[in-house]
Length: 207
Image (tube, rainbow, N blue to C red):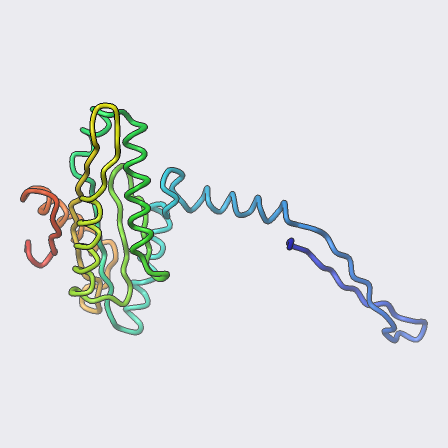
């Protein structure tokens, strides 16, 4: 199987009638492969393979516009790995990168095709859950939190464990501005961290 570019031109006789067609084919597999590489470089985080911040913000805007037109709701989860700096300081940055990759893998395995998971920066991640209510989102958040707490990576200095704090906010017809909802989730995240970490906190709970 390969990608092909096909150009078809008609062949006419002296009376201007089409009597045949000529097709010129070109194998463009290398070009398509390069396009895929460029797409990944422009849209994904190179370490984790998740979407990057720019793509996430674009999808958030699209979801805000959809809800504004059609109604419904979505939930935004902001996740931050607890004491991640200690992992880098104690076990080295290579181990820190491995923790980030394993965490990203958990996000992928728990995401639907319509969900948008992204690395927002450093050890901070976000997930947009379209067509999701608060109860459904809470189940997702708690499942993620528990799976992260089960991470155990062997290292000569000992077993590396990690936990995650999660802030959640709802995107709805009454609160449709994506940037504001993102700030709400961020606020809830820091309340979760300030109140002991390794927990999920909803924005309305901290108003």
